[in-house]
Length: 326
Image 1 (cartoon, helix red, strand yellow):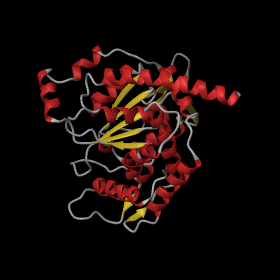
Image 2 (image 1 turned 180 degrees about the vertical axis):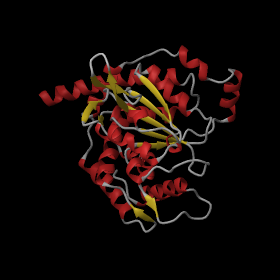
Image 3 (image 1 turned 30 degrees about the vertical axis):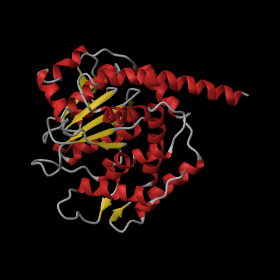
Image 4 (image 1 turned 90 degrees about the vertical axis):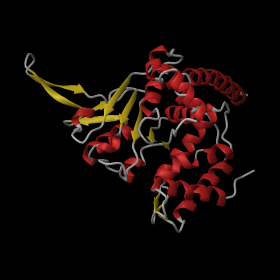
């Protein structure tokens, strides 16, 4: 009886969250037009406690999207512009000596925000890139033998230009694995671009967006994700997919167990965003490319395909090859 009551409460909470998510999408779509699926996927990452890598050419709205989400969700926001001379202390913070008290105190860096935009993360050196590893994985920052808790919720949205652009440093596999999703915004369709030109762009419109949620809503939604059900059949399906990547002849590195756990968590959050209290095979398939493609390493890049395009093709091949449960 208690179980039935809990299920009813979960259904009610999912319906409430769904109405807020629609309001969030409506607000964000005022400045990022025609990209509702990308917005939904980023919200999935936020509710799953994950991070997002936006990989695309400059000028398609990556930074604007991050700022819009922070405002609509009413989360504290900081933007870090990654450059070749950026130091780890510029991100996490530094110990400062205070003469009045004759003691050192910790001055938090810009990473201490609920939504952090790591802009052009691949334009800085690997040492500085790695300063985000502990923050993204442990939600803490260690400086001078002291560990500092990061805010809750905490999400990093990193932007990255294609690695064949001049002056870029490709992210190592260990850091890519910390991102729940790798996404592309892409160019808008012609009609949407005409609308953007008619409004003289959309950057200045962020100030007009209305907050429709807060940190409490995000925290409670993250907890609700735990109550989304995944059947044993779907768990076996996820394991079959990740196992297929480990045996794929075109791959050096397949999907790790940690990535499989993130995959299931992402599917649960995505089901919630779609307004369901259970995961379906479609959820698992829909998230395969954004969740898995950046976590594999190909033997070689064939023809004129980029490494990104090639890894996405292989994941799609795996999804098509492994039979989905009915």
